[in-house]
Length: 182
Image 1 (cartoon, rainbow, N blue to C red):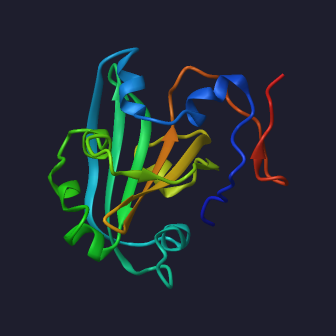
Image 2 (tube, helix red, strand yellow):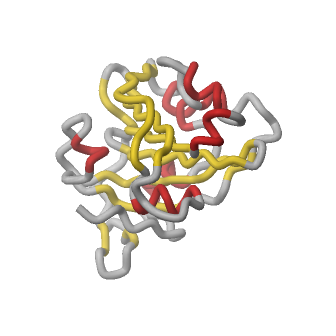
C-alpha cells in the first residue's frame, strides 16, 4: 500500500471543523465523554516513506521510536494516533515519551510553553492502511499530522479520526483533498 498523500488543504465541510482545530484533541474529546488511551505499540520501528520525509531522514526504513495509541471516548475508538521521533530525539528531547504509558500525549506536549507545532497536513487513510488495520477500522478516516519541535528535534504526530460526530467526508483522489458535503 502506498503511504497517505498529505496536503496542506484542510477538509472543507463544516462538519470537519474538529480536524482543523489546533490545541489539545484529548481536551476537546473529554468535553463530550470519558477519554482513555490504549497503548497499541511502543518502541523501535522502521520509518515509513512519509514519516522519514517529515522527520528529515534520508530514507524510509531507518530506525525511529514510535508510539501507537487508540484514544477512546466513552469506550469507543475515536482517534488512532502514531507519534514518531528520531533516535536522537528519543534519547535527548523526547525521552519522556517512553514514560507516558496510558497518559495522553497532550500531557507532554501542552505542558511546555516552548513547544512549537508546524501547520497541519491532511490526508484520508484507507481501510487497508496499516494504522487503520491495527484496530480493525474498516472505513476510510480523515487524518491530520503535524510536527512538534523541542530542543531542535522533531516529533511527528499523526491522528486519524475514527468516530467523531461528523458525517463521512467525500475524498477527491484526483485533487488529493476533501470536498464539501452537500
